[in-house]
Image (cartoon, rainbow, N blue to C red; front, side, top):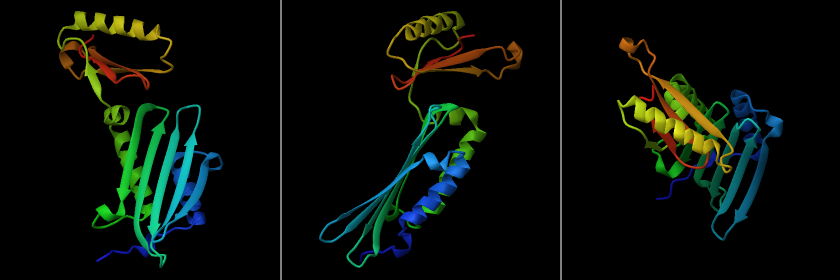
Length: 205
């Protein structure tokens, strides 16, 4: 039995309206978003692709890709949604994916986009999650050995700053919630953007 999802079809104008509403929620200028549609027909299927892209000098970015597959009767057989979001105040890239055929209760595109926004807002409530997301990291230094770790942090940072290939550098200072040292202890993390993983220096007071 082949499941059909005719109500998941969308037109180009409907897609534009969704992007307009979505960009408003993100405070991204709609008129600067590149929107396109392409169609590819085979003997049995018609594949319709929608795309929306935006990026600015502050590293805000949006990349949405939608694929809708129809049969000869123009009924929707399957659909995929892929979304990547980036924001100026975090080096993290947020990825979302949905395939109708994988879900017992498939989501309409508009509803799925709204859910993605809700997840982003949830990440923003926890700054640590919003800033680091699921990024891989390398642990440098020695936990509990402030002197050694602090020196490793300084040497590593100096080396990165003197590397011509590094165009952008993120540094995170993480305060320790410890009353006995009056909250004056910190760990540090360095990210040479798009070069290597986060470098974490624990207890580098």
